[in-house]
Length: 234
Image 1 (spheres, rainbow, N blue to C red):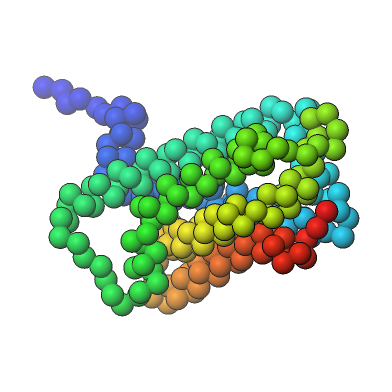
Image 2 (image 1 turned 90 degrees about the horizontal axis):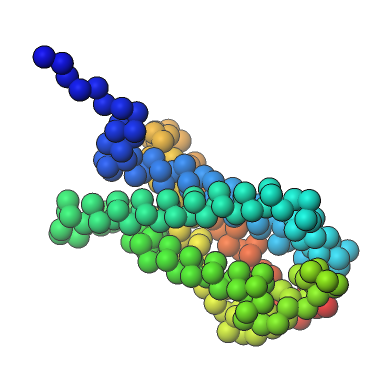
């Protein structure tokens, strides 16, 4: 009498079906997306450079035809990470709701509890913002894009022109505030998901999650605020 041996695919599917599997997927994709958010912020902050063309030169480097393969590969990789992150988060939320129909929130850490409660709707709103952001500054669907030359968008001018509209700037600020909450809970949960949790350094992990989320949000929010205040001009 022989027993069937599970294939690696069967083991992977079985692991993912358990809550720990979904948490692991969210942790790995979360690290990828966190790295992208940091890199994107560093790129955006070049708008403050004394060289007014610095951010345009950075954009031209990224979109250089010789880098097209790498750029589209990175976009595909990030899109896959976003989709996996959202699917795992939704399935985990449904599983948790089914396992505990009576709502329960631990009250000893109000910021963390509030961030956790907003995760399920802050994620879709951030995703909607990303779509809007691409339509705005990449596709030129929201506002006409200014160009320095053929296929050379004037990124600095487009960012400033976009944020001179209070509604656009306000939506951006709202999205960054939600991103701050999302990152705070997400980064903290990521450490727990990979087993990095101990009373000795829990407080430092929470501080890192809070500080990194706050700095990313403030860095991004500073741009539309600087535009509306007249500190960033063409």
